[in-house]
Image 1 (cartoon, rainbow, N blue to C red):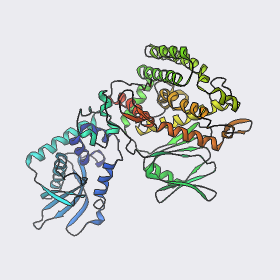
Image 2: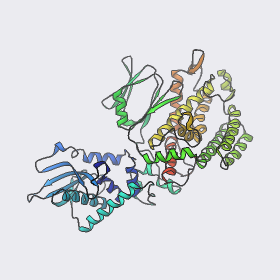
Image 3: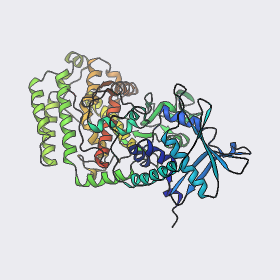
Length: 534
C-alpha cells in the first residue's frame, strides 16, 4: 500500500536528524522557531520557492517523492544538461563571515533528492549547493556510501517521529549554541547544570501588545497593528515586534487582524476591564499533540510531585518578598518551615492545608510591606485578602495583577502546545484554566505582589487610578495603564536563574517552567523543579 503525502517524511526533517535527533523530534512535534538563523534561510529560498520563476533549462521549487522510502520534499532548482541528465542545485544561506562548507546534512539532503528523482525515472548526473550570501556554487560528488548513509538516516528519522519521547539533548556540543531551537530544547536545563549561556526567546525584542482603550478597534494595515477610536489613530506597531495580544475590556479586533495573528501563531487573550481572563484564541495547528494527550491522562490521575514543587516554591517566594519588604521576621521563619513541609505531604488535601496555612500567615502580614505614611495619605487600609468582588484599592490592584499573570502563563502554556485547562494542582472540573493557575503559583508573590507593593510605596497610584461604577470601585483607564506598564517592566526584568545560573527575564522563566512540565510529560525531564528566589 502506498502511503499518502501527509504520512511521508519531509526530506528537510531527515536533514534535521543529521544535525541533531532531538531537534528532528521537536520539529516533527510542531516546535518551530523564528530566529535570525531562520530568516537567513527564508531569504536564501525567496527567489527559488516560486515555480513561476522557472526558466527554460531550470525548474524551480519542484515537488518530489519516494514511495519506497516514504519520503517527500522539494528541489530548489533542477537544471537540464545537454545529454538529458539533471543537475540538482540546493540553495543555502551562510553568513558572509563564515566560509561556505558542504556539511553532512547537505550531502544527505542532496542524496535523498537524487533518490526521489531517480525513482521517478529521471537521471541525475550532478549535485551542487549554491550559497546565496557568497554567490558561490560548490559541486558535490556523491558516492554510494553517501546514498546508503542517507537511507540509514531516513530509517532513523522514521523511528524518531514514531517515538513518544524526545531523544536526549546533545551534551556539551558546540551545535547547541548555534541551534535555532536552543530556547525550546533547553539542553543545559535538561542536564541540570549551571551555564553562562543566556537562553532567550526566539524573538528577544518582541513584546505583548496590551489593548486598553475602551470602545477602540484594532485592525491591520501593511503588516502593522493599528488601534483607532472614532477615526482617530491611537497607535500602531509592526506585527514582527509582538508575540501576543491581550485585550482588556470592550475592544474590537477586525477579522483580518485576527486571521493574521492566527497565521503567525500569536496568542490573543481576552480579559474583562477588571483583569479577569475570559478566553483566548490560538492557531489550529500547534506543537506537541501527543504531549497534550499525556497531559490529560496525568491531569486525571494528578501529580503530587509537580504540585508539591509548585506550592513549595510559592511559599518560598512569599517568604522572600516578606523578608525583602516587610517586618515579619517570625512569619518568614514559619513560612520557611512550611516551604519544606510542602515537599513532604502524602496527598493533595494535605498539601492544600499547608498552602492555606502559609497564605493565612502571608496575607496577615502583607500590610508590613506597605508604606504606612503612603496608605494614610491615600486613606487606604489593608483589611485582608479578598478575591473576586473586591471593593478596596489594594485588592483590586492585586486581582488585576493576578489576571495579567494568568494571561502570561496561558501564553507560555500555549507556546508549548499544552492545554491551559488540564492541571495537576487545581481542579479542571470548575472549567478554569487549571494548568495556568498551577503555573502561576510560584510567580504570584515575586511578580504580581511585587508590582502592587512597588506601585503603592512609590506613590504611582492614587485616587485618580480608580473610578466608581454602579457603586463598585474599579481601576480607571489611567490606573489600568499604570499597572500594565509596571507589570511589563517587572516581567521583562532580568535576574540570575537560581537553578541554571544564567541571566533571564521573568517572562522567559515562566516559559522555561512550562517547558519543564512539557519535559515531564514527554520524558525529556525526570522531574519538575520550581523557581525559588532567596
